[in-house]
Amino acid sequence: RDRDRDRDRDRDRDRDRGGGGDRREAMDDEEEDPRARGKESMDIEADDAAFVLGRGGATKKKIERACGAMIDLNERDYRIDVVGTKRQRKLAMDYLRYVMQQRVGPVQIDIDVPRDDLTVLTVPDDCVAFVMGRAGQTLRMIEEEWLTLMFFAKMASGGKTGPGERLMIFGELRARRGAELKVMSAVEHKKPGHFVRANEAGQPETLKVGERFKGDVEPAEGEWAIDTIPLSNDDFSYALGAQGSTRRKLAKASGCVLEYVGMLACIAGFKPERRRCRDYLRLLLKQRTGPVHFEPAGRDDVTAVQVPPQSVGFITGSRGETLRQIERVTGTFCFTSSTTPTAESGGRHHETLLIFGHDAQARAHACEEVEERIREHARLQSGGGPRGGP
Image 1 (tube, one colour):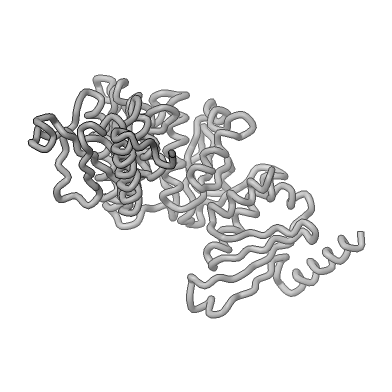
Image 2: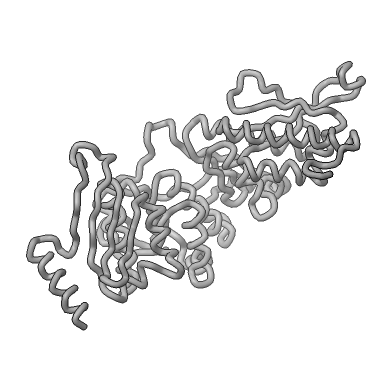
């Protein structure tokens, strides 16, 4: 009780000073340099402390991921310290207050105030529970994947009224667009036709994007956009992969946002990222129907590795699993490109392994992995045993 009285007295003193319970300690040169880091503190109630922390610290961690600041929760003194740039601290304080509001009732967001960290998506009433998932697990998974803070809220002013709940998505632009497309994908699965407009033949044609509120704009007009590619049923299954593994592989290798909303492949990012992703998706789909020949000349996102004909099967593995493992570890997209017979290959077709990716270090890592497997196969063929063996 004495500690509670001391804390209340300190809080009253802060308010008398005009701090409103928040305290700020500026670090050197913060006013001159927006990248400089500073510290702000906020006193909270005991019940809020547990709510902000979340199970195993999950809520605090997701706020940190969304705003980029470091948050320290002092459960003994019921105080939160936020360290980061001026922008990061402001976002952290906003997000903390939104989370604490959820404990006592619906959150209200004033969308008349421009925010460049917020995207609002209207979710049909009959899809809200599906988007949330059991105990909110589906929404939490999307937050974790895209490093966002997401919750349903009321709009304090402005915006269209009507059916549906407003889902608030906080974070950086790429994260918000990725999370938005992921939710749109879930809604389209539950309610086909809500976000995808079909043509007269009934084929998916365009993506229906809702109203963008003040501040929610893309940089460099014409550079950032969302491209769409219609997929057939067979192409969709092939491009998705087991539990979405192929989609994630293409997105990571290209450095682009890739989500499937209905039968539309939605590709979001800057122009070079979208071009890479479109190319990778088309090359992938060609593999479904037969061998693919590709000339890498003139591209800066591909590394070619010559694979001895006798080692191709060893490199790819059963049902391609060895090559898939290399892709997962390195964040690349790999496949073999057929070429013409050569004297060195004894008149047989030799294959070139193409390693695609926007990150040169990732491609170099994949190249090392492949070359090591080629050497290991040569040791096995010569009777030397596997690497690390006797």
